[in-house]
Length: 139
Length: 139
DNA sequence: CTAAATGCAAACGGTTTGCAATGCT
DNA sequence: AGCATTGCAAACCGTTTGCATTTAG
Image (cartoon, rainbow over all chains, first blue to last red; front, side, top):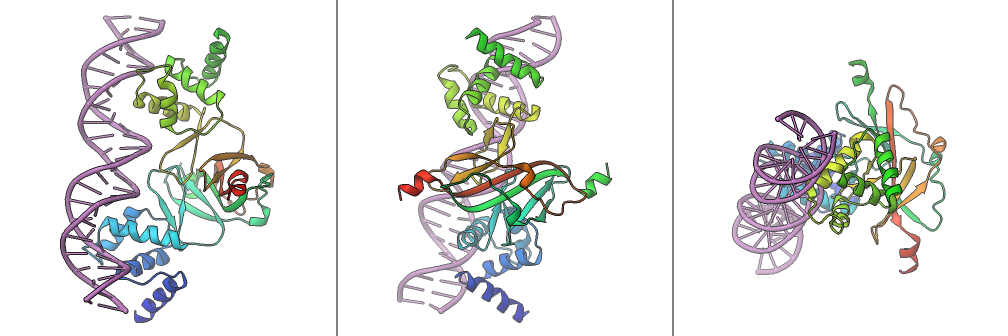
């Protein structure tokens, strides 16, 4: 328990983020359940441990994490923003039946972006839609 | 003029969309100015030719075009949805300075999506962010 | 004690909805 | 006349903001 909090504090420190109750809880949630939650999902998850938490604080925290590079956003076509804590380069696949978002491994060297001379490329995102194996079987 | 409208009507018919004033105007706008407009931009462009047009009708039309496959949405991190009428496979690059969205050619065969066995991939999207040549020079 | 962090509630803005008005066949 | 299309205004909902309160060093 105490060890885990130390781990989380160190994690934040690497990104020059000062620890606080909500920051540790959000980080813990994101690291333990490596999913791609919306702000609302993070908020609801925190409620049980921090009943007085507000959505604004969750947004604050997520925005801070974004600006420090702890998180990235995933551009799905959905209205709600989804957050991804996995810093490695990977693609996202969203099932159009169940809506679940999957990570998949991509070899960055095998991605040929064609002619982008003169452009400074800082981030690349690969997003696919279709049907996941599970929904495919249940059709 | 009349010829052009015929062309637009044929275009809609290929997608099983019945022509109407607003549909022809939206299609014309999208085809002529092959940009990636937001719904608001389309709305403002229509105002001069159709002063009584409403945002709701623009959203209706865009949603219809989406469902019929005339358009695709572009997932940028922005709040507003952007629409793309270019059906060919290509990537999008958004400049983080000026916000402009560029198309760039991608050879689909050179995109290795890694292990996606069992997944039915229907659409793929490649989105990059960075600095465009123009903004790079003016820094 | 001071600055940062948090909570609250209202505002914002893009989008959607319900329904009345209009247009087309 | 009957059905599709359009316009209007209000509602919706994810997100942001301003400000008062609390917390931490």
